[in-house]
Structures are given as structure tokens and as C-alpha cells.
Length: 285
Image (tube, rainbow, N blue to C red; front, side, top):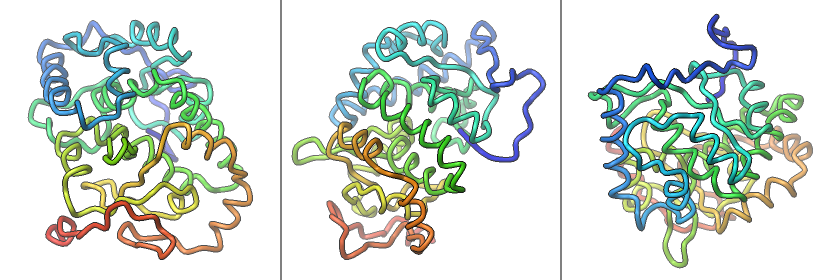
């Protein structure tokens, strides 16, 4: 939920936070949440990572209606020290990273209309809370998110925000994780989407590639449709260690000398888990 060249709305504080105003949600808005929740909760067992499902249970997100951020933050704070704060929408990069670095997750407070159940371009409260917050109850992933925020503050000095954004996209938003011989989903953009929850694991179209930090940060992504490539981690410990152990300054310098990769590219050194047919993308084209 970060972007550049934004003007802070007058109702937002200096850190861009706003009250959630939970008591202003209508019955119809709460019903939209309940409909989306029921649909995703029914299909995610066996598909979503165990850590995500554990977070859903621990935070009691199955309770009817849009969650109250204060109550959610109290539970989350006891588990991993994180809180959830409302923002008016996209926020500047520096604000976004500053919140993450201090274990505050920024979430939009609005919810989509009933006719937008299947797709919404801008993240709403269902994407942000249902999709992201359960993983913040997992200590290792919670540490990864804080490390990412701290890394984002440093990346601004190197002019490398676009490279670091790819890491967020292919892990936090659209990441897959190994589960024995199968794969599970943990990325918020997948778990909050019925269509992509099916596509990411079942469709033969996308490439599924073993996670590599440099590879991920060279790879472009698309924001308007299902992904043509997913990156697969072995564990959340691997993801955290890769972030903490990487010296990003020389990596950013190296990336400046290398061409960006298209979402369909496959490199000789890639560890392919699934070579995709790309049929979905070709049909859409």
C-alpha cells in the first residue's frame, strides 16, 4: 500500500493514519465481509499454509462482521508485538516502510461493494486484514515484515525501491511455500482471492520457481491479472534469513548492471518446480 507523489488527506495524521470508525460500517458492508470470509475459509484448508490458518483461528477472524482494529491489535500485540492502523488508501513509500519497521501494519478501512466480490484493483479492508494480518501472528513472518520495512528505509537511499517492491510482491502478496511434496499459498493477494487461490496451485499456466533473492528482485510483475510466475520458499525461516543475511548495497549495485526479467522468462540456473504452459496469458493476449 505504498506509492510516491501522494498528497496527505486533511483528515489524516502526519503518519497518514486515520480512525477506523468501526461503528460507521453498515449492515451491508459487514455482510460483504462475511460473504467473502465464508467463501475463502471454505476453500483454503489444504491450500493455505498452516501458519496462515493458525493466524485466522488465533485472531478469531471468523467472528461475524468487519474486524475492529483495536481489538485485532490487542490480540496481535500479545502474539508478536504488531498492531493494525487504518489509512485512507495508498501511502508514500517512506510512511509505509516506517510503519512496517515499527511493527504497524497499514490497512485500508473501506470495503468493496457487493458487485466487486471477485475483483478490486485497490486493496480494501478484506484484502488487507484477511489476506495479510493472519501471517503477522506467526513470529518468524512477523520478523520478516519488520525487516522488510527496515530494508525499505535503507533502499530509498540507493534509489532501489522498485527492486525491493518486487520482493514484497512475490513473497508477501503472491508467495508460495513448500509443504512436503506439495505447495501451499501464503501471499495475501492469493489467499484473499477465490480465483487466484485456485489458479496459483492448480492451473498449468504459470511458472513456479524456487525462491532466490536476486532472481526475484530482477523480475517484473503484473498487477492487473493472475500471475504468470510464482516464487516458492522452503520455509519462513529461509525467507527471514535471506533478508537478514543479504548485504543489499552491493546487490542493488549489481542489479543496476543486469537487465530486468519478464514475468515469463526462465533462466538456465532457475530451479523450476513447474514449467508453465502460459496458456492463460496467451489466451488473454
